[in-house]
Length: 284
Image (cartoon, rainbow, N blue to C red):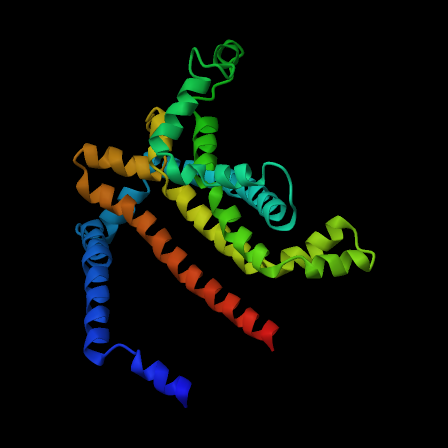
């Protein structure tokens, strides 16, 4: 009874709750719903045939293929790195652990444009990472697909690790130690105990990583060279169409990224629900 009265005494008044709710809804309406509505309206302004024609041009299809390719390489690479890094940080103590944790967060604090410029310095004609040698042997990194993949991987590699580290730390090491004491090897413990326990967090990290990979603009813009039909990803293709004053087509292509964002939000909600459900089952 005392706890109940205490809880009710610190509860916000109904008016305050309504004001806060309306402010939140108003913010979402102005900064999320209205831009999406304008985007859809402009994309379909000239009708469905014009919309389909805009997203099926040769340059746009090439941009879509390159975006999917970059994501298909960057996301699995980040999954391997993220799982390994999270496992090391959460389950072991070693020299340099704090340094590794700091480096994982580096892409969050470094501008993507700066990251792209670093790759230009590394693989350019006078780059210190073998740029001249690569050019002499006909290996093109900069202004080609490899540089786009490298830039995409850099800006997205914290997502998986950052989702898994707190989850693994919360779970502790008791189950792994029990499995090892029963004769399981390190790999068996990882695949049969650790990985199943973090599967929802891993899927969530993959989802965010994929969304960022497909929507990355800054770093990719620097290293791509903006070669139409070859090194333009979907975000860069939107910029090209907009700069060409092909407004309807630019909004049509941008709607693909908006659709990806909506799918990501829906998938995130499903994963959150599944994760909460699995935790309730584990609690019981």
